[in-house]
Image (cartoon, rainbow over all chains, first blue to last red; front, side, top):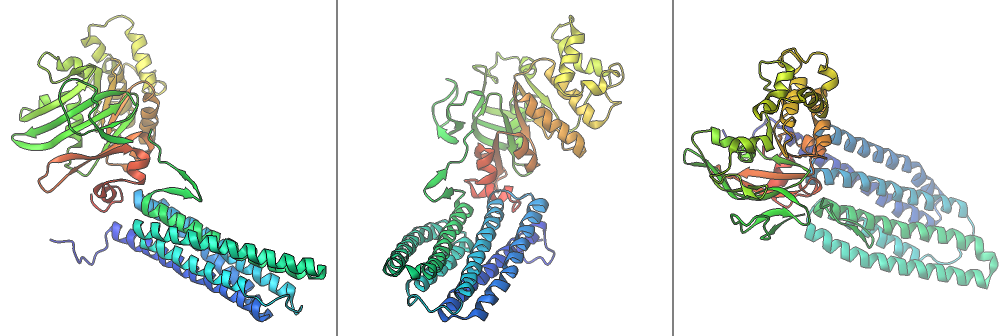
Length: 238
Length: 277
């Protein structure tokens, strides 16, 4: 009798379902951290202390989600002894959950800076930092999409595009730093507020870097290639 | 990394695409090796090299020809009347299927350990001494027995029971006695056909540790259905697969990292991840 359409799940079907659930958890977690970055930057721009505090409070949920994903990964490795593409998928998910958790911490850091700035008058209108934030969040979304696709061509294309975007974020970060330095030189009293904004810009720049780490993991999952920035290691031949 | 190459080890036979590793000395190679049972082809055109002093796992679904291939390496298929072997198995600079080759001599130099321990209904001592006696060796048998049992990591467990029946000890110990029996004639290669599949986890660990230890001095080719075991003990993995026509072929050969981590062939990926069995 054909197995197609069987209502009795095989071990493999259960495993596939668990892998699908793992990816769904990652997508949900990614949504949480995208929202956290968005909320943290908006709260900074609008000087909304309450919203900043909410970002800080909600980071616990992100941390908890990461631990649950880690537990799922360990359980799958223990139970299924995965091989080949399955193993790469689980290991990549484990790494990506860690990257997302760090991005959550950057959002929390931005929110804490917003609260520290409090009701001090704005140093300058925030234009480039929110732009960096939009780009970084967009990179994060696309890196996750690449991971979910498991398509080597899609991942390679995404990797090239994201690298260009990352360069653009780096350029904006350099511009923000230069602008803030000018303000400090013009009036040393600006130093404290300029430093706060530099921390914010640094955190946003790191979000983009983490998105690059995620696309590297997507590449590993799809192709088995282990890459970090410009460093690549070959598979052993002996 | 495994690759196709025509730079063959031997002058005999030919194979357009031999699976081999660069810069690694082979101890055995097959060229266009095919086996049929009563006119039905079981494996077809297998051409690959076994690196010296390594552990090579033969993996693949049931019925893909792993054991058939393994039995070709020491002419065990000669014992099956309906079996016919075509192609070349080069070992020690010679095709072992050449008419002038003595299969008994081959089986001394290429030993075999089977799925179920098969000690003779004789004492442990006589089990290990068997091959040496056939070879006409009578001196220093005590030393040979001790050395072989030590190499098989079972000496401490049976040293006070050498005169007891080989069947009186546990399954794991029996299997290691059979390995000692194979080692006693100083083989260059030991073939193992699922040597731990009938054993409990502790005995399996002992056999796996033994295989790794032995690979420093002999080459081991092992058939296993246990892929975790293959990843633990072997250096290289060869994947056999039979298509709809039920003829086994070697579809992939590579390092463990490649075969179990990032297989090139979709059928290997499907097999090692349990999508096909």
